[in-house]
Image (tube, rainbow, N blue to C red; front, side, top):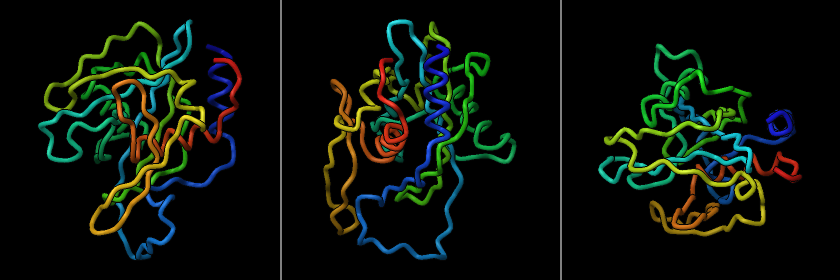
Length: 201
């Protein structure tokens, strides 16, 4: 775990700009007066002996926003939260029953702006192995893990596109098995990949 912690900490210290859902769409002009709502997500890296993984969720198909999409635990920051870290930890507990005692927060990646008007702070953390997620049925259909090596390899990312609000929008995807990881989640993982060394896990 010591080597993994060192690699992740080095990634947090590496240079890199904030990420955005608009990164692959340079023709989009954003109004300077736009107001973004604060949110945060937890990027939980599970330190297995056999190789680290990233814990992700599949959102419930019953949700109004982003049903069925792959996401990190996270959500809007609330008044009682202790900053982005507090919000990310609270949401991880509410969504998958991840106890704070199992989480070692390492730091923040630069904020990510979404097309839905949020400024999301990604909080990178190490998770002790042995944790079994208990998804909240109202929010999370499934929790699963993807090898860290897969999502920190830039060559595994594919740029795809679709029409959104009348315009063609391009975005990153990083598929894994039956899971279609795309949009803001894939872009934040790509931001981590761009900062990582690519030695053995």
